[in-house]
Length: 348
Ligand SMILES: Cc1cc2nc3c(=O)[nH]c(=O)nc-3n(C[C@H](O)[C@H](O)[C@H](O)COP(=O)(O)OP(=O)(O)OC[C@H]3O[C@@H](n4cnc5c(N)ncnc54)[C@H](O)[C@@H]3O)c2cc1C
Ligand code: FES
Picture (cartoon, rainbow, N blue to C red):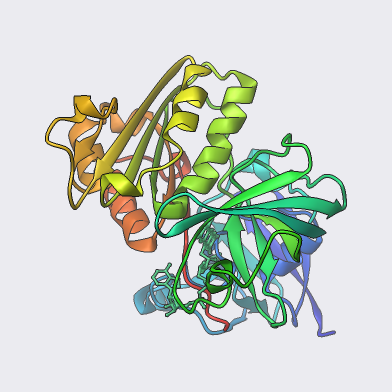
């Protein structure tokens, strides 16, 4: 163990101990403090904060997450920063209600109950819990699945809610040769065991807000949004919800019946599939109120009163970055924007 330091966070009234050997984010997990985070690997920028005073050393990170000019100006990534003195840190993106409300990390043993294709490149992986019998998490969070016979893990968002009686569902895009997703093409089978750790992530519903909700997702980014929709449908939320979903072609759309059924449980729900490569000449043949173009272009065309809404963005990093840019241009305050970028893991 290294030396112990004290980190003081502003503008919230919060102090925490951190060991030199651990990152500030890991120290927070250990002590039940829910700092804002995404990938935990220095790739997404969700944990970016400002160092007011003190010395830190940063492990390797991506300049997509923290550009050199930001680092020179004093910004740090909490998932990569080690404290080498007592620190005073300003949180840029935080949620006072969430900060002291972290769900404890759990280790899970599960058994694969099904691996089913939902499109040509996305599979539904369902896992039955062996131990413990229940997994406590907030809708929208993710877990790390350990890669069998390998040191590494990969992060995947739960598509289910904690109430789904001992079964978790993940929606996973297959990458040929991918260390984990490649195993879903015949190597892993129902009955095999998988170990998980979690929950992680700040992509959770801000229940106290009554702002209209706008979800923007692409590809397997459907997963945590489905978890939010399933939760809101269970809770019979009265908030207005619009879900823009980006895909290339009609054949990339899936779970349309489920989305329709979940929408029927909500007071005010609109689903807008957005196809960027090919789209039907007449959408009415499909029974969908779809649009042509990139999902962010469709949001720009359609979404009224942008600054009044609360946003949940999830999927490939270029899509999330484009959506963040659009929201910034439209003066949407940062605390109304929550995102998970499905960044690639840096470890093999
Ligand atoms: C917070 C978080 C949540 C996530 N949730 C999900 C989820 O719910 N569903 C899901 O499918 N994925 C999700 N991911 C991504 C996932 O963790 C893996 O990175 C992805 O599945 C690839 O892992 P792999 O082991 O199959 O491929 P790897 O062995 O890591 O990579 C194999 C090859 O595929 C390429 N590749 C890997 N990922 C991408 C990518 N995103 N875009 C382009 N090329 C890529 C690599 O460059 C490499 O060439 C999430 C990531 C994060 C950070
Ligand atoms: S860069 Fe720190 S959580 Fe993603």
